Amino acid sequence: MNVPAPIAMLAELTYRCPLSCPYCSNPLEMAARETELSTEDWVEVFEQAAALGVLQLHLSGGEPAARRDLVDLVAAARTAGLYTNLITSGLGLTQKRLAELDAAGLDHVQLSLQGTDADMADRIGGYEGGFKRKMQAAEWIVDAGFPLTLNVVVHRQNLHQLPQAIDMAVAMKARRIEVAMVQFHGWAMLNRGAMMPTRAQADEASRIVVEARARLEGQLVIDYVPADYHGDYPKRCMGGWGMSGLNITPDGKVLPCHAAQTIPTLSFDNVRETPLAEIWYHGDVFNAYRGEDWMQEPCKTCDRRKLDFGGCRCQAMAIVGDPAATDPTCIKSPMHGRLQQLAQELSADETAELVYRKSP
Ligand code: FES
Image 1: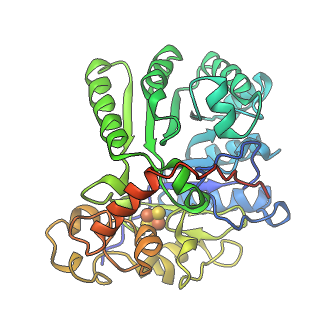
Image 2: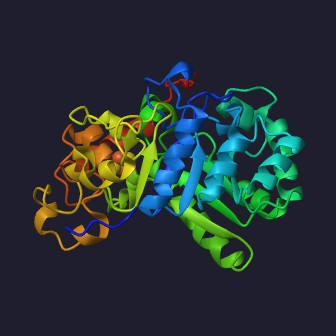
């Protein structure tokens, strides 16, 4: 098949993070600080990515501000010709550091929001005083002139705050808000019982987003990731496996998506040993579920297969135990009924407690 060049790259600079969000998509086994790529390694990766055709670089983690060389990395990415987006909790950013990031050429900031008040945000983030620091950082980000996107992960415990979160985005003069219903990958899998929304909540979230989009047209863009356990069709995960984006882990593994390490049959190439272009075009992992050849029925002959590529491979692995199965969020999957039953059971679990993410 004709493989397109990737458009976006997510660089997970570190798994270290001051917050302990239970919905974190980082893996259960996180690479330790000593194994993180060096500044020089990352600069080399950014240059290779730009040469490969990547346009947008998302600097993420963990908390990317935990890297002391963040300003140098942003400068190197800009020199390589990449558009740079910092995905941050805001903790670890000072006014001085933001000015340095601005001077280094940072293009955009995406700030996470765990709740709309200190009680909720500090409880979900597992960090007392975190909300206050985040709000201060938000002010500095806007004052420094960065375009701001708020990112709010919603789940059973905070979904009632969604209207206020949208109001906050307007008040902060954010250009966009990304409302993502919790996705159960990585650490979040431990918290399905405590965080699974009810079907009524999932429907209500969709209604709130539709209403707010109409009301705020021209003022605020609202991106929305619906609750997939309650959906009828799967999402086009990563725009299709190995079709538009790639992720680099803190220790240099190259993944087609953030959760790919949950598929035990895959063995990942590392930028320390193999050029990025070789991994993207010819690596076994990137070709494992690219295109349609790997598909089984009902995906193989489904007329939606070019729309969603059979959905999310990691979700098929997690629920069905087979990464080549149809994503069970699809109504055509034989496991769809089981998934809906599971979602209902988990959303009614009143005993589950939050399991906080541990930092390496
Ligand atoms: Fe891996 Fe969807 S998260 S394919």
